[in-house]
Every structure is written in structure tokens, then in C-alpha cells.
Length: 339
Ligand code: SAH
Image (cartoon, rainbow, N blue to C red; front, side, top):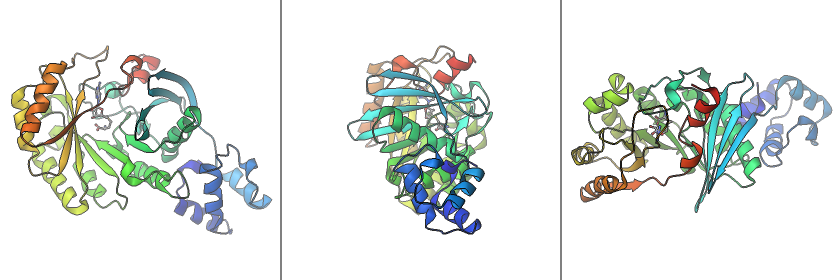
């Protein structure tokens, strides 16, 4: 077990289980997340016996950063995991702070046609510690605090639900990285049973839904998940989620030229989200070498945007980062592994 996969409760239970004191958990958390030790030997306030037990049973190993690509206000990191698999994460510098987009799986099984991440099927889930370490290691390399986290890298977080929730409980803890729940966003392609489960999750983490189409016919064509959970099931589940949590939803909508960017689509989209407390984030498509989709031009994006506005939908157009450095999900890993 890697120590970065333990939340404070786990660590307290661990110390109790080895016949030691619960309060050591907070001390160790402080060493890990504030003093940022890289070896247990740096800990000075635990007895030799306790420390040798901890270091014989738990690992403090980090990930390997194998590549960093830099552009204005953005850095993209390629990590190597202990089993030689690769994942990526992206750091973005905003005026409100620094955000990191983390990966949640190696590969992805959702198979969205426009997305690079699914070109290789899921190899495995990421463990909570592998998500925590993406943040810790980027903070170290970048030299500034990460204030915001989005789970929008490689993988479908709700297909790795328990580890992702554990990850949230670790990075949110005030004795650790103390990243506020409202500064954390998890994005799903729409796995309805997990949306229901997530409505009971105690932290106020934001939910984003990758919608990308305003009707089933179109959504079935580009997102296979829609065949399992159609809009008739997804939208009521989101209404229910809002009723339970009172948290405003975000819809992501990639604009794909000639596919889902017509003005009729915009009207239909406005109708679909009517009555939901939400906002729509329009995403200019990040073109890749491998896939046949093209980005919608700026004029059409603005027309699409205007129709939503006219229908009183809250809408933003996503600021773009990293077009020059293959920062769209899965692109860097695809290059590395040549898939
Ligand atoms: N599986 C989750 C989270 C990862 S994808 C989900 O589907 O939400 C994060 C977002 O990036 C999704 O909205 C996804 O559809 C979008 N995306 C994928 N490829 C993209 C590309 N080439 N350009 C822009 N956005 C892309």
C-alpha cells in the first residue's frame, strides 16, 4: 500500500491497528502534505519502532515524470507508473489560481468517437495515491500551490468511483492539501447509477456532464454510453441530483463541425436543459491527428452561443490552453505509446 492512498481516517485506523496512537496520523499527514517529505527517514516526531513499522509496511514511492511540455500558462506532464504504464495531467494557470486536470484511469472504455483517450481500452483503474501524486508532483515541479482540481484527464472517473472518492477525501482534508470541495470538479460521460450514488457523497464536489449532443439519435452516434443511459434516463437523474444536493451542474458540449453545431442543435439543447440549474460550457474541439472530427469555426461557435443566450441559458466558451502541446486528453500518451 502506498501512503498517499490513505485518507486521515485510514491513517488513524492504521496507527490504532499497529497498537500505536491515533494522533500520529495527523503528524504524518503534516509531514506528507505540508513539509513534503520524500522519505520516512525525514520524520522526526515518531518513535523509531513506529517509524520502522510504517516504513516496512507502507510505500512512499512517487510517480516518475517522464516528460514536461510547456506553453503560455500551461504545462503538460507525462507520468510513468510503477508498472510502466503512462498517464498525463495538465496544469493551467488562471487568474483565480492554478488548476490541474488529472487522469483517473489508464485508457478508457467509454469509446467516445471524438476522444483520443479511448483509443486504447482501459488497462486498469488508477489507485487513489496515483491521483494524489499527480497533484503533489506537479506542485513541486511548478513551484506554486494547486488550488483547483478537475478530473477530466484520461479515463471515466465514475468507472473508478471508489478510488476517485477516496482521492477527493485525501486532497480535501484541511490537515493536508486542503483543496476546497467547491474547487474540485468531476466530469462523467453519464453513468447514471454513479450519478445517483454521487448525490449522497458528503463533500460539495462539483459535477460536470459530458453532453455533446441534444438528442439521443446524435448522442448514440458519438457516445456509446448513451445506448446504456439515454437522455430520458440521464436528465431526470440530474434533476434528482440537483434536488438532493442543490449544486449547480455543468454541461460540457464540444462543438464538432457539421455534427452537433447547427443552430437547430442549439435550440434543441436550450430546450433539453430548461428547468435545470446548470451552465453550459462550449468547448472548441481540439483536433487530433488520428480522428476525423473537425472544430467548428469561431463565427459558428458565436452563433451557437447567441442562441443559448437568447434562450436564457447560462453559457460560457471554454478558454483554450495548450493547443500547441497536444494537451487534449490522451494526446500525449497516444504519441508516447504510438497508438
Ligand atoms: N470521461 C469523463 C472525463 C474525461 S474527458 C467525461 O467523459 O466527462 C473530459 C472532457 O474532454 C470530456 O467532456 C470530453 O468529452 C472532452 N474531450 C475529449 N476529447 C476532446 C478533444 N479532442 N477536444 C476537446 N474536448 C475533448
